[in-house]
Image 1 (tube, rainbow, N blue to C red):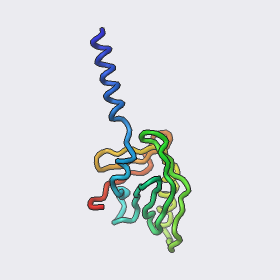
Image 2 (cartoon, rainbow, N blue to C red):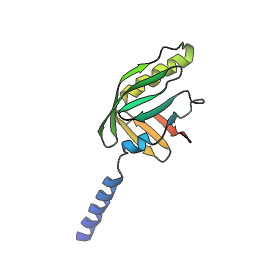
Image 3 (cartoon, rainbow, N blue to C red):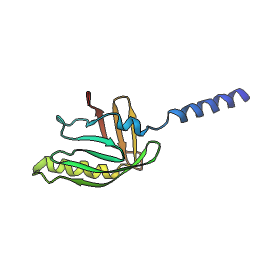
Image 4 (cartoon, one colour):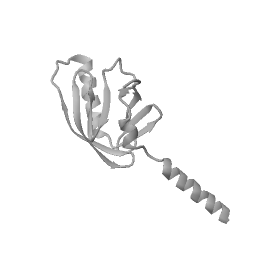
Length: 130
């Protein structure tokens, strides 16, 4: 019985040490939205700030860590480039999803941003050479 409890405790503690993602992992790469053409939708995190391309415009905002693997994006602003049609709608949806982000997980070269219910909102791939 004691061996089972010790094994369970070891497994729980080992899981805690690898659970969640760190800001260092998030900041270590430039990110490109999966499925996006070229560098249309990108994300970069540096020193409490988030920035990137949102389709037509560049965006910028504040980012605050709420705990390990948890964050909040706020005060998003965008440039005012001409943007019409489907790309304008995609940009609007992208920026709305960014404002809903509550959690992030970095797994290798992939970043998943999720909402408060742990539903994946946006998935990015690390961009090589940046």
